[in-house]
Amino acid sequence: MRRVALTIAGLSLATAAAVPLTADAARPGPESFRAAGKAAATLPTTAAQAATAACGVSVGAVNATGTAGGYDITATKPPTVANLSQYKLFGVRASSTWYEESDRSTDAYYGMILQGANLYAAATIYTGTATTPTVRATKLGTGWSGFNQITDSNYVYGANQHYFLYGLHANGSIYRYKVSAAPKAYGSAPGFSSVRAMTLIAETAAYDTLLVTTRGGQLYTVRIPVTAPMKPIVTQVRASGFGGYDELVAQRCGATSTLLTAFDHETNLGTVFAVGRTTGPTTAIRSFGSFKATFGAKVNFLLTGAYGPQRVGD
Picture (cartoon, rainbow, N blue to C red):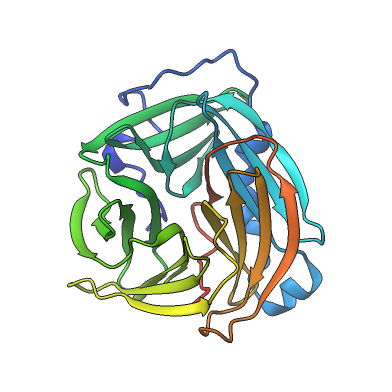
């Protein structure tokens, strides 16, 4: 089974029938953006590999003009950061992970985005040697105006495979949806009104785990069993120090750790952390320092491969 269902909402590597949103094909082609998801396949996923190779993360971003770009980040101290080339996408106010899938001469990214009150399945498609992508999107539903952050899990590594979308709503609840051509509600939980940012750090057969920050600066894990009804298990990781971050992007680092990039929109800074397998307040966290997020985007998201790496940070 492929990590990304290529037929989601009618979007696939043969996407001629999909509905395009406005895009300017004359903008520069993002060859580095195209390669970013593929680079995830070379990231260290064992302790031995992590001892000899630096972890990294590719971050996609969309700014206020609807231009896409981002950063290729290597976990050195200070972080080594290369800007991804830019291209015209469309307006986005929140995004899930974008997964890279290849088929012969075609490369494509797929993710879910919020635009206004609508949820879309979006795709950026490169054919042959083209350096300028074709941008397409299909509307999945409306009524999403109350959501300010989304993230997803996509577990396809054995039994109990699942693809869930999580949304943080202004009413203080986290909602879960089964991803399909028409996302289906699969539970919700109240009590998250203080949450400022969230990302996924673990996807397993039995549970998913979100890492969240609060406006008061706390850092928590939210472990959510894949069964219904939805009953999260909330554990504090840090009591302070994380209040300034508006967005979190997480990628696997080594056997059980997470490379976390936290974005502060007010200062346009990204801070990179190595987060050990979470164990509550005893979780090991090390900062690699900050970098100037020169692209200036207010929407940042993970770029990764269609076949992983699986996130296993909890």
